[in-house]
Image (cartoon, rainbow, N blue to C red; front, side, top):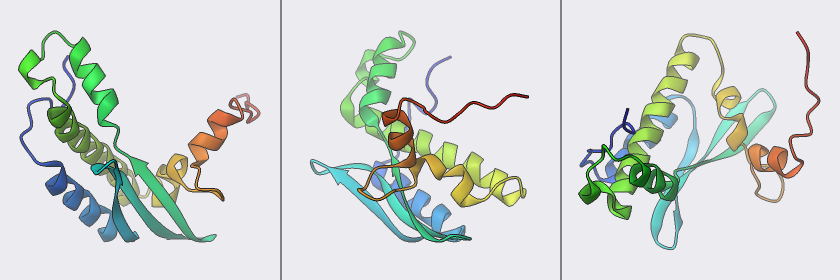
Length: 143
């Protein structure tokens, strides 16, 4: 099965706008597009939580999508470009967020809960980066 949305023609800016609207409709504020070397690379936003306002940074890693597309022989080589990978990455991120928001709407989780890996800590690192940097040193539980 090929990567989702590999044939999309929707501009990343349009998708980023859709994502920003979805986040703001679910209580996020200060929603902004982040850039790396002039290219859209993700979104940053804040969310009120029971512990106060928290900042989050959601990456959209087009380089990883491009590698996945290049490995998939079912995807035409003409689609395996950085520009197409960016379009695909943004659509995949949008689809993922829509699924997370469905959990929230159903009362199964809160926005801060599903976005926790992307929560920014002091120093600008995400919770995921802190966890990975400590080599996953959260004690494993047992059932």
